[in-house]
Figure (cartoon, rainbow, N blue to C red):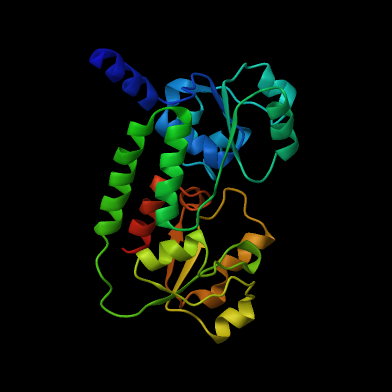
Amino acid sequence: MIRLATLVLWLAMLPAHAAERVVSLNLCTDQLLVLLAPEKIAALSDLSRDPALSFVAVEARRFPRVRASAEAVLALHPDLVLAARYGAQTTVALLERHGVRVVRLDLPEDFPGIARLTRDAADAIGVPERAEPLLAEMRAMLASVPSPSHATSAIAWEPRGYTAGPASLMGSVMRAAGLTNAATGQRLGLEALLRHPPDVLIVPDTPAFPSLATDMLDSPSLRATPRRRLPPALTLCAGPFTGQAVTLLSR
């Protein structure tokens, strides 16, 4: 009787839906899936291989890609589909109608949220034990950042003049790096920026094919303003790897 009770308890602790064939329909879920359970990947989204956007671009080349269409996904016979709470919602609804298990993951804007996201993804995939090593590495990166000796204002300036406000992932990255965000999240033109320049300007790495939208980031009139460059792949999606963005900004 004792052995039977122990067996029942052990079975209850197992993941309710241990996935073996997982499809990801979103760049952000692509990266979590590659980091947590590459052996379970049935397919990733097209963006997973883009080195300008994806943190796992090199690893993603080993896996099949799939269009965000219900027909294409169903042909892969997945037992789990990972999606975000936005984008491809028609496809997701059709998949659910066909009995496919779909997990929609949140896109957090701070590091506690990243921890929850990573654990939720690991639980959904059926590898809960793999979340903590990734999060421990992220916490170590954050803990290694020295306390700032003085206040340093910064603006994260994106193409077309978009900025990152305090309640954003980049805002959280800046705070963790010891920088004071001088932007509100509204668009900021070159003239307005020159009237009130920050101590540091944060810009994305120059893309391989610059455009008018990105040329303004390298305006000669901004040469006197120190800048730090970040690969967009570190902050476009939230993940344990976002700690690397903090490390780069704190240097």
